[in-house]
Length: 408
Image: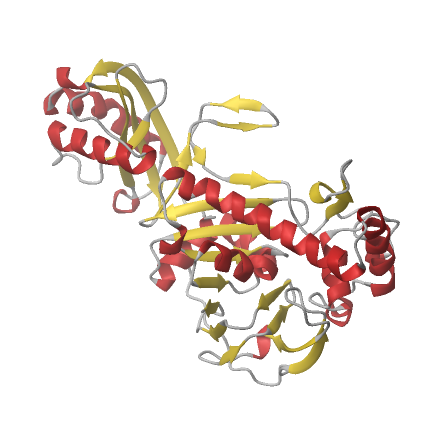
């Protein structure tokens, strides 16, 4: 998510949904107006944690997710995964369960010759055998089984994005979808089309994009103080007095960072009296903001998040928050010219959608694209870390940073 935030800023996109699809799971996070969503109600290994963390919605769906049939004969995908060991059946490492990757290999949307360049052997015959066993239990032929697995994956991803957007008062059509991880670019355009989104971004080296985010993360400390009190009992001077020790604590935690590099961000957790949940209201303009202005923001945020507000109801302060940050340095990335990199060629693909048995798609090598170069779908885009799918009706252009901007 951190890398998606940096990429969004570089592209001038304030509204971004990041979708990281790996081998076992997918992590989704919403960035609105340049701000990632945060939560204090997360957990690790089933243990609740009341500390600030990125509000990442995770689902059990990835490239290694197992395709299976339930007791009613319906096709299912995940959450069990074959993982890296034994992995998909087509890898011939001891796995016998059909996975999403097996479906892609059989359809031709993941190419064995491309995997071979990475030292991975993928046997379409093993994928076919595994899918055939699943299909027989569901009374489906191979094509229906493979395409069904892809549709189930798309359904899971759509529901995940719905959970962080529509369910929280955001329209996904107002956002660009940044898709990464080894399997994210394969499914992004289908997910975006179903949600009405018109722009998808494939970052450079999507398979290791999360690692880039770890390198770009800011130094950050959060200081929180509970102070449950009716909002009407507080004036500006009282709020300033409450924030002063928190500001000092956050500044001290930043250590020897130069004063000009330090950023202090203040916010309040507010709720209506009697509620059991709070909304975090940012104070970007503190100390200019007045208590009345802050209350008005809370009412507006409540209406945006939950669909209603009642300015006549008394508001209650629960927590004060100060975040101390030292922003990281984001280096500029520029691509070299295409040079001697391999150019596009035509390949036969069993159509992931529609009635056609096979279609001719372009196989585009990501590192063979110069900045500004364009192509239209249907196409597969491959690089050393991932494969992306650009369906018919979508167009892609490479930018100077190596990202592919895919639109319809």
